[in-house]
Amino acid sequence: MPSNFAIAVHGGAGTISRALMSPERERAYHQALEQVVQAGFEVLRHGGLALDAVEVAVRLLEDCPLFNAGRGSVFTHEGRHEMDAAIMDGRNRSAGAVAGVRNIQNPISTARRIMEHSDHVLLAWPGAEDFAREQGQAFQPDGYFFEQSRFDQLQEARITNTVQLDHGSQPIKVKKLGTAGAVARDQHGNLAAATSTGGMTNKRYSRIGDSPLIGAGTFADNHTCAISCTGNGEYFIRAVAAYDVACLMEYRGLSLEEACRIVVHDKLAPVGGEGGLIAVDAAGNLALPFNSEGMYRGTQTADSPLVTSIYKE
Image (cartoon, rainbow, N blue to C red):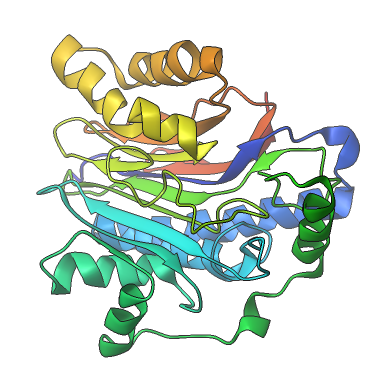
């Protein structure tokens, strides 16, 4: 009998208010999340690897302008797009990541190529793009990444001289912590995690968040769990948040749910670390905690139907 298999995806967390969300936009988010979950789940249902499932899911999130990753990435202070991504294989804890890349269509796939076809884990711009070209990765011109709502956010952030975590089309005061990610357990018992982001609106000085940092925003180990985080990256970096969940499980024997609760609500929230994470453990259990008003998310398992959610239930 096949082992329990499962997938979870997220498209960012933050202050996501029903009152400020139009019905049309809400439907668009649910439809996009459904398509992403379905694509990743099909890989698992046919016996594919968790690693393939999370890459497929995050590529779709990167291709969707609704999410702050790939095509939907926010603008830097200079009016560019600087993207980060990471992927990790729970079978042997191999990993690959990119930071600050500008024109790669799917940074998550370049991260996987780094993991599988180099001796390194993390490559940054411009060298990461040189590697991507050598590997035949797809590139897009600047116009491909342009979204008017993201550009409008940049103008407002410039006026107020602030860095914004908002990546949606809602007013700039409504924070949405923009990252896209996926975690999965396949029928063979393997775990994997992938995370991709465009970072912060109006960010400067080649700022890099937690997403491409193994152990901070992304982690996977078959013995414990796979994690993809979304939120204020600086806090997740300081907390080594993704690895902390795995450590609580490995060294204290906590369940996935309890370990995630401690990290998200007891460690991150009190110091201002707003956001959340998605997680799956070695048994296929899922956890999707967040300490903000909402998180775009979706799940499906071998014995439970596809579900997508936005707000606190």
